[in-house]
Length: 389
Image 1 (cartoon, rainbow, N blue to C red):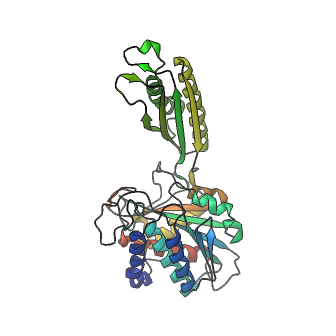
Image 2 (image 1 turned 120 degrees about the vertical axis):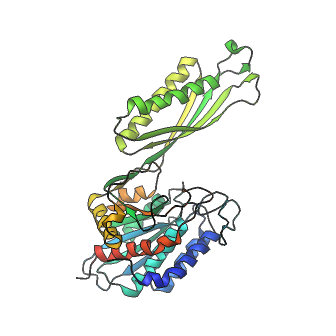
Image 3 (image 1 turned 45 degrees about the horizontal axis):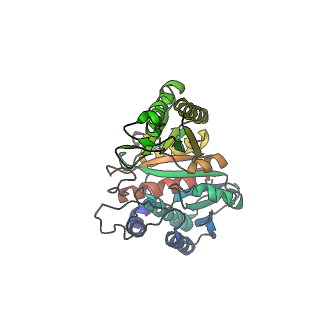
């Protein structure tokens, strides 16, 4: 089951859709233009049902196979939103929206799923129902959760769900997938330290929030090295530290923000518990007061065993065993597809994007060379999971 020849014929057209999405990036839930184009194309292809406004601006296309005796329904998900980054690619199809760009390849993800939808509506060589899920707000907006809460799984009867993401640095046409954790849980913390300000020459009359905050930053690093099992992966990064405006004034307060990552629920719990304890104890030791806001965001992206095996077998049939990594190292980035995998069994697969700049980089671009591989993977997944015979 190699790359499907039809996608060689459709390649230029699908790439054109991708370039159009790239030229007109939209943020989070404000993907009205993109969602409108997706819905119109799904209708033109002949989907049996096209629903809009799922999870605010999500789009769903339903394609029924030649047979429905299996009763099986699987969902395929692509994300549509862009990022608030100023593009620096210089391409002819570069972003026309100031300060916005498709720096994570969601333009390519949407175009490939549209290409697969077109093929599946033409052929319908499967026994069951394929549900094309086009999701808004993956980039920090939890659009997957919104779609689930809006009844995505129940309304369309989805029994299994599959996702795909391009990865720079992996050769175009290569895939990587395994059972278990693929991406980390992502949490956020905000720390507000209140001390007593004063003259920089008389620190003994103050409670210095800069000093308190500095001890917090340094001490939090010991949580990963001394409270987390060395065989587990965890990250605590303080990325914002703001305090003061003059070099001779100790300010009354300091403001810190950061991110916390873990690859399993137990480690995630440990990190939050120890962060809360350490921040409170440090502030008390210096005589300061502190307010910690800890926000749990995306869960761990956790592939289910049987569905991960299916995804791997499909990818291997397309590109061969030498171009499939069955044991990729988990990525400490986050992905809201995790909520879909908590709602239904499924799998999330990485697809190579070649030697492009990294994700979320102003010079990043999705590789059009990857389009036939992604489209073929989606179609082959449907036909393998729900065979006619």
